Length: 228
Ligand SMILES: Nc1nc2c(c(=O)[nH]1)N(C=O)[C@@H](CNc1ccc(C(=O)N[C@@H](CCC(=O)O)C(=O)O)cc1)CN2
Ligand SMILES: Nc1ncnc2c1ncn2[C@@H]1O[C@H](COP(=O)(O)OP(=O)(O)OP(=O)(O)O)[C@@H](O)[C@H]1O
Image 1: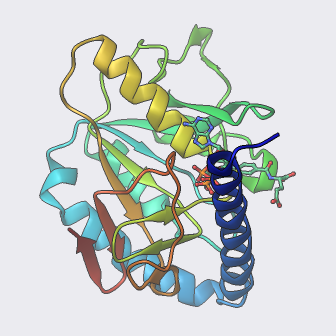
Image 2: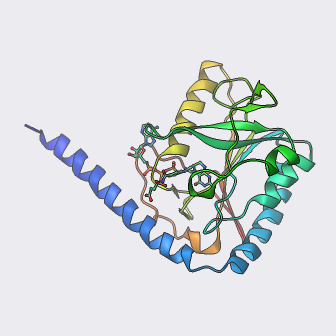
């Protein structure tokens, strides 16, 4: 027998799931209809704004995702700028698909970046080894702490809520990473900076969120930034 509280909790969870599925579906068809030229133009503006942010300029260790071939902000100018400015770049790699776990792996330069093979969904991901050595990763603690994470997503809203592709990779990573930092008595948490196409930025409250969803600190869009 379920008590009333449990029934309520389960109903809430399944409503949330249904709302997320519906929004993801609507957003994906909307994004699929944007032309490559349109995405490139918006990505160019987003990169300009992101690279000019003081918090970006002051960051030394930055995680940035490598874009899918379509339907997502193109981060190639951003990752190249991170490398060119001598900052350390880390990129996501899914390490356990069943459990939705990923980590961020260090990239050692433009040549390393360009040679990365494309995996699932056409996303480029590094091998865990580079030139016969294990790459430093965020969760293994073998790298300096991240100052900033450039976050992908399907939709965002003006209250800084985020909807991802539904596997919980970023939410789970952030929970683990936070726990790791706390265990090491490190007070500073990386800034969470989302990049979003105009069409992906919705009104406050339009992105449904649950207990494990992380809000971002800033959204960088083609028309400027959204922050609290
Ligand atoms: N460019 C980019 N890289 C990223 C992300 C992202 O959103 N964008 N991620 C952000 O999380 C992680 C990868 N996210 C993924 C999410 C789902 C599946 C996946 O297995 N998809 C299923 C289909 C599921 C469906 O259609 O609903 C599949 O391809 O079989 C793979 C990667 C890390 N890297
Ligand atoms: N910290 C966590 N611990 C355990 N499960 C989690 C955690 N974060 C998310 N999940 C689970 O992962 C699943 C997908 O979550 P959700 O729909 O929020 O993904 P998303 O935000 O779209 O994905 P992502 O974070 O990869 O972009 C949900 O079942 C959720 O409960």
